[in-house]
Amino acid sequence: YAVLALTGIDARTFLNGQCTQNILALPADPPSPAAVLTSQGRILAFGWVRALEDGVRFALPIDLAEPLRTHLVRYVLRAKVRLTLVEALDEDLPLALRPTHEGFQCLKAIRAGLPEVSARSSGEWIPQMLNLDRIGAIRFDKGCYTGQEIVARTQHLGRIKRRMGRFGLQGPAPAILEPLLLAGQKVGEVVTAADDGAGGAECLAVITIDALDCPLTLDDGRICAPMPLPYTLETQT
Image (tube, rainbow, N blue to C red):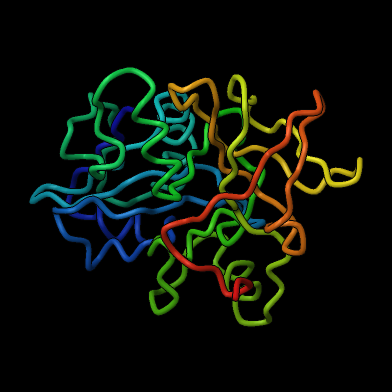
């Protein structure tokens, strides 16, 4: 992870207009989940934000840090804000993402139902597909931000047709965006995955609603069995 540091008197108001989280009411601890979207409502970057006296720190996967900075700089215009990349600290991340030993960081996040968006998957999903509304990353009572219309329409019209589920399988972890199949037809793709240290793996995957509770397969034939998330989805009973 790296941190995009926004400093200056307009730092919070600027990021508030580009982010799903309410930056104006942001605490310093714990870090809060947040996403920056495209104008079409697709997740450009997802990470963790916290407030400091001189601005905001936005922690996100290192391969998206510079692309996000470049994207946001185009919207600065006359705002008094500076965007710089700095090293991530433990306190910039929630407990589930703080480093322990190799491999465990991603596995803990998967078991906590926390997605990761990388450079490879940037622009693939709208926030509700990654359950961002279930982990407090979307504030529906805040002011306008880029992509808000799509997010609000999806939420209030009940058109959430795909959700993120957790799955377990034998063998090595599948790749990001690897397809998951039901009866030979693609019903979703991998968001993030990690080996479990016992000869198997776990993954989070965006799946069509009606296939969330079904055993799915990868192209190589391995079965991906549904596993519980630590939060509920409105489609679950």
